[in-house]
Image (cartoon, rainbow, N blue to C red; front, side, top):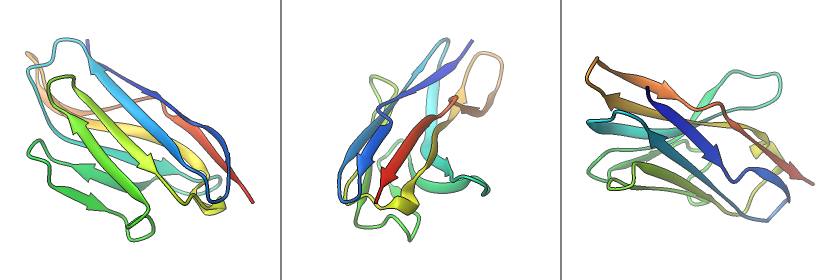
Length: 119
């Protein structure tokens, strides 16, 4: 059984920083793409950033230059450093990973962590 567990959310003032982390555990053979998504209040979930196993990254235009995604393949973790936070970054942030197990290869999701940015 595979689990993704996020940590690091919280309340921060505009202009501040937070670092989110996500750890994958269970019967994992390998992990392909890992990423962060967010769902603002009353809106649909949207892509924040992704990173391949080789380290290639992709960012939403709204976070480019402010957020940095990174991963540790040995530890099966992915992190999101968020700087210069804005009130519009307020959302539930969820970790996603495309994982190969003995049964299949498919995307897995964490339960999410709340990030609230006050103005």
